[in-house]
Each structure stands twice: as C-alpha cells, then as structure tokens.
Amino acid sequence: MAISLEELTGGITKVTLDGRLDIDGALAVDNEMNAIAGSRKAVLVDLQAVSYLGSMGLRSLVAPARMLKSRGGKMVLFGPNEFVDKVLKASGINTMIPVHYEMQSALAALE
Amino acid sequence: MSLHGKPETQDRLILDSRLSEIVRVAEWVEVLAGRHCMSVNIQLSINLCLEETLANVIRHGYADEPGHSITVGFDVTGPAFYLFTVEDHAPLFNPLEAPEKTALHPDRDFRIGGQGIRFLRRFADLLEYDATPAGNRMRMGFRDAETAAIAK
Image 1 (cartoon, rainbow over the protein chains, first blue to last red):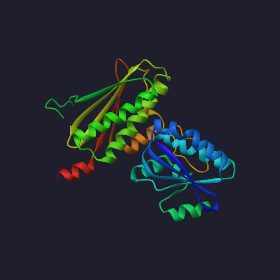
Image 2: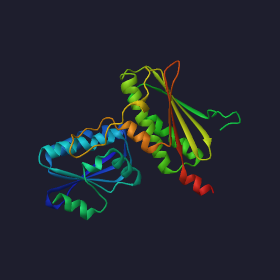
Image 3: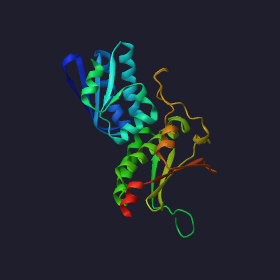
Image 4: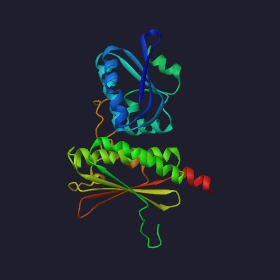
C-alpha cells in the first residue's frame, strides 16, 4: 500500500492510497494517516487505486476521520471501486465519512 | 460435490496463529482464482471473509498467542461454487450465534470493531459452523455468478 499527498487549493489535502488496504496495508499507512489527521483540516482520501478493503483498513480510515472531526476538520472518501464501495456500505462507514463518486462534489464537500 | 456427496479436498493452507500469517491467504487465493478462473469480485469477497474469520480466530480464539495452527481448506462443490473451511483448536465459539453488531452510524461513536460477522453475512453465500472434537469448523461458500454466467 502506497500513500501520497497533494495540497490542493482551498486548504484541501488530497491523500491518494494505492494498493490493498488489508492488515499489511493498514500498517503501512496508519502512522501517516494519523499524522495528516493531526495537522490538516480538510482531507480528501482518493480510493480509486485501492483494490481491496478489509476491516483493518476501515480502522485506517475511521481513526483519522475521528481525529479530524475532534479538531473541527472534515474528511471525505472519493472514488471507491465496486468492491470497496460494497465494504464501505456494509460497514456503515459511508454514513460517517461521506463517500463521493465525482471529484467536483468531493471537493465541494470540503469547502 | 463428489460422487459420495462429500466435498473432496483439493487444496489446503496451514497457518500459524499470527496476524502476519494472514497475508499468505491472499497469495493462496490468487493461485486458486487463476486455476479456477474466478471473477475478481468473488476473489475479493473470499479474501475479505477469510481475513475476518482468521483475524477473529487469532485475536479472540487464540488470544493473539502464536504457535497454534489454523487450517484453511478449499473445495469446489458445484459449478462455480467454492467452499472454504477454516478449522482451529481454539475454545468453542460459534460466531453465527453472536449478535450482529449494528453498522456504524453517524449519531454513535466511531467504533469499528465487530464488523466481521456482518461482512461474512453480506459477502458469503453459505455460512455453516460446527463444533468438532478438536475445536471449531467454519465453512464459507461463494457462488461466482459472473463466471457461471459466462460459462452458460
């Protein structure tokens, strides 16, 4: 699992995850995700290149989202594939962290 | 199903009770998927259900103690129907009888635990539990509708 950051206009940080968000993938990104959540206010997590999401991976999304929320910030998820989307919905995480399928709406949600 | 009505084991993976072992499952499933022309979606569903089941056996059944074996068996029991059997020697526990925790909800705390059984029920087509003389046996079946449709 690879993670990369891009600072967009409007103070939005785009975090791109690439690979499997399984047990190993979660371990690979947890520290950086938490660091981002502790230092940014508006985070867009791009899931387009995430091929798999398990419950350990969900923790890697929920924990930083919770931290951001406690600091008055926001997180949105963008572009899950069919399988990842099904996992997000089955867990209910989509009711807590907004999921967007169009980049424009994802960015608008963070403005 | 075999001629005798019982699935005959075609493949088997034995893991040690360490979370780090679970990565071997994805590699093994990938080999099986290639051999049986499984669709990508069913492969991912299998990965998810096995990952959840094995993580629970390791964390709760074996209390994160390494040195215990977990056996994962694979059988093809019908056209595009794949059966995975997870067997352990942990204290008896039937996850299918455990109450399914509610899905995450925006009005409640951000709690992620307890999603395993929810995933099993959503992503597997068959779930069966048996207590064995040695421990627990969990069977999970997956029907690959995409592959079955192509085969028609």
